[in-house]
Length: 187
Image 1 (cartoon, rainbow, N blue to C red):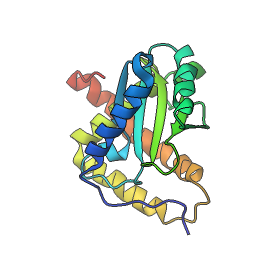
Image 2 (cartoon, helix red, strand yellow):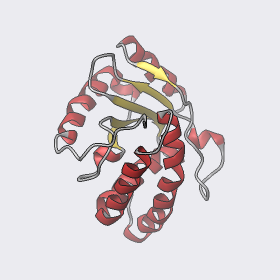
Image 3 (tube, rainbow, N blue to C red):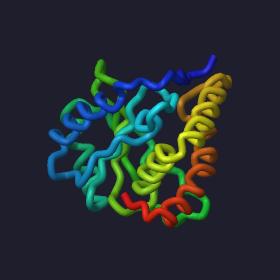
Image 4 (cartoon, helix red, strand yellow):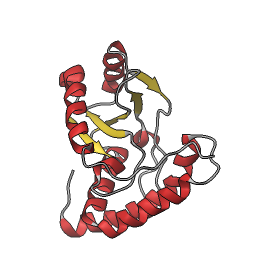
């Protein structure tokens, strides 16, 4: 049995994000420059794990740990990893992929909060990936079908699922860069 459950899109995910983003903004205050709904729950009509992915962006790397301290003081829990996977064709410098991950306080709405630095490759990746899927519903539907099929595999952990999904996301992201250049997209 797989460790992953993919569910049908929930039209309330955006409202759930709004409430959660307000809580995060209240905790982090001026430590963050922006808070964004990312991941599959941010794309209309896309099947997803019923976990909100949210990105909080800080101005400089030293503020990542400041943000984690504020969140853990509010009962959020810091988790690995401390970096995202590098994407073929994008900058390979490790500092481009540094992040922090925290999850919601126990017994609250499931949230993966990704803390990243503004202007870094991983911060841009999350936003461009989301916007490309929003603008390309057929690609989003194909990605959703991949996720449903992947979730039926005998995976032992969410980490294995993420490792399986990463190259597929990269295959979507690389043409998203061309789309961004053609359309003048910006974060």
